[in-house]
Length: 115
Length: 110
Image (cartoon, rainbow over all chains, first blue to last red; front, side, top):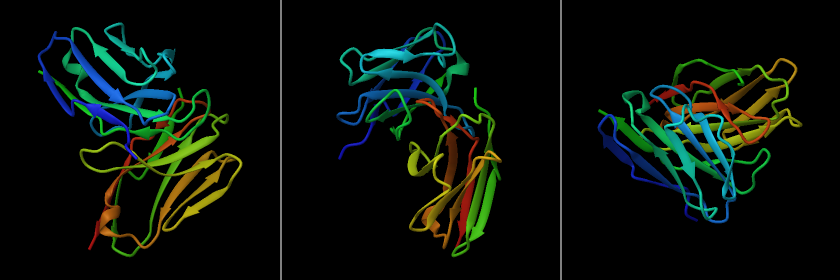
């Protein structure tokens, strides 16, 4: 079946601009996660959704970052006033259940470059 | 957060030989240990995982062993093939949040 999809695959933006990154989880998966992966590093947790609500946003680096999941399926990660340090690959993952330890399946990521 | 150390950072093996990657973690409450394979330009792919009530798990040419007392776990790939070349990440969790190691770049020489 279809896996996690993310759009766009690449995004180049100028410093100070606003960007939106989209994630479509595996159909029926209730839990959704965003991670950020810098070059040469492992992914780092940003935020976790169980259904429509953000159950844990402790990994968001600052208040320029925000994510939503209004209908409990697709999620959008929003970054305001982008900075060059925001350049990274943003990964989305989903799992069949939340609130515990379940297999997380990742999408291909969005490579964000801030110039 | 959880501190996960992964070694080695790079590993080159001859085709047909075995590859072993080791990870250590700090939080004794951790109970889930997945391994991911990431190819260039792609997202991490779950290849095997183990939970704390099991000491070893095998799936064809890959296996994972867990030593909870010493807080370390390892990935073993036998009979390596060129398509095994990739970056491998270990991860640790005791809830929904995965903490990853820094990755091991595995190169299989033909």
